[in-house]
Length: 266
Image (cartoon, rainbow, N blue to C red; front, side, top):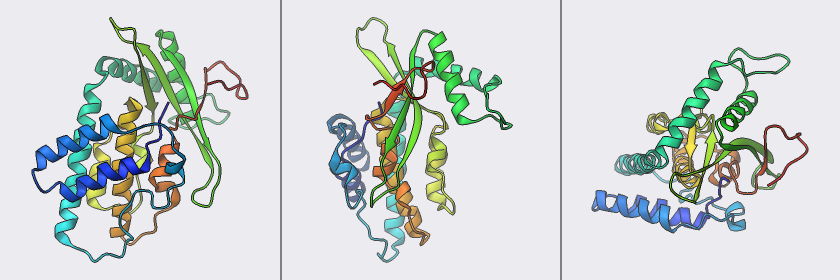
């Protein structure tokens, strides 16, 4: 279900915010976040996957400017906080129920590996969570995103959970993405203090709509590049926005927990 955001749309919203956030700060922030969440086309785009600059506007060779440094990180933090506030207010009851199920799963002996680790493995935890979600009457499935190796990024795959639930009094269904190791996706070595502060604000486990997830990914990937540039470190292709968004792409295979590994269905 995770949907890939078009790079041009991300570029317009994030970098437009960076250039203008210092004027009418509160109004600008509200305007930018609203525009971002309401007007972006979340359909998968070849332009996104093949973008050359990944939406980043710096080549890493610009002279250090203390004022711009401060303004940039304040802007990123304000934007991230606004997105997280909206994320928390959407589907609150369902999220709380799912969080409870995840905690129950963690407390059980969920790892069935031949040589289980002390705290279990992510694969077994995902399967246990899906089993418990289905027992609660929720439609849950394992999603596997796969992408091929290209000149711009290595190939790979990523697993996450998708839940479909019916809202009370409405015919419309709500679709949630569950990423059990969300915060860990953005942890990097030798991060700047400002970047580490952003990471600390992320939920350890993401449970919510794909559009908020993609919004957070956009903010964090931009901040990742800025942090690594400031530390004079090379940023690997697996840290770039287009690569990160493929982890929760809408081209994922889906299967129920009792289906064999080679039997995928969408």
